[in-house]
Length: 121
Image (cartoon, rainbow, N blue to C red; front, side, top):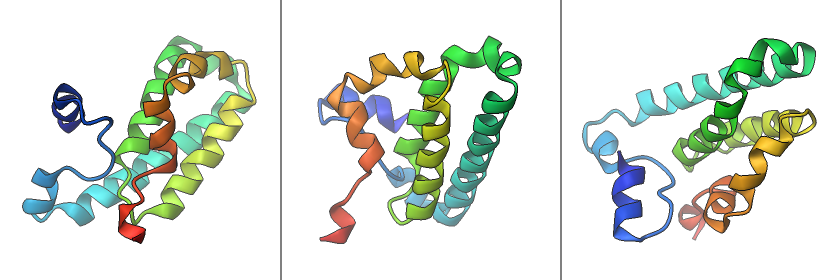
């Protein structure tokens, strides 16, 4: 939801935790959900390397999912972001790398890999 709202305002990509999650006191549950999604992506990366044909019907959705998870990971979850980037590196070592090219040609998508860094200032 917030990704669309921010994009409509022309403010660039939304990266982090939506204010509605923070206000509702659900930040820890959101972080746990993101960690679980990162673990699932790590498993999918393992399956892609071992049995790429099993994932082939869903292959076109993988880049969108990976980049969406990268955008949704809370800023303080650097280990989860790192684990997802390692999984992404393994996926890019397969024939699925060509599916990521359209996403990496857009600078807004590349900024989601680095994450939101204002919390370090």
